[in-house]
Length: 155
Image (cartoon, rainbow, N blue to C red; front, side, top):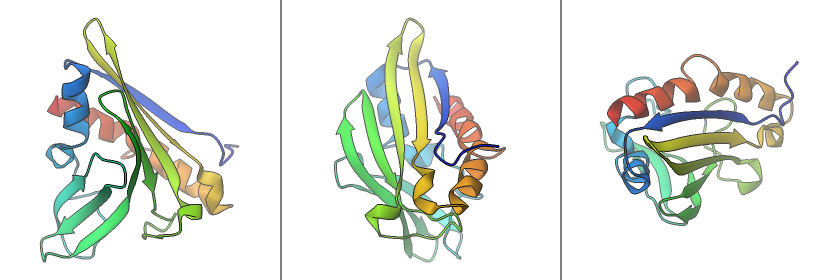
């Protein structure tokens, strides 16, 4: 049985320098994020955005102009690391309560053939028993591993 406190970790190697890999993950987030399947608004998603600055928003903009927040940027150490607060509940709804946010940390480490991009999603225990369901969802097919493959393809 998986504990809700277990982090979900995935990594990919991209053929980019760390600053380029960071830029693709953050400023160009919408270039690789699957807007047709990974959004929370009722209306179709037009843009997925990440503002790579402390306090920046992580959100989607729907085709009807409405916006849905997913979370916020907690820390940025460009081009080595970004720490995001994920404010989505196990029911995929936004909850502004910082005590209910999980964390998504992405690191960018230079390697001989490019940059190793590692994503760790942790803190599921803030959702109690439902945290196990969320953890299972983000670690399953269509979760972070699949999303990082889309990111690698965009690189």
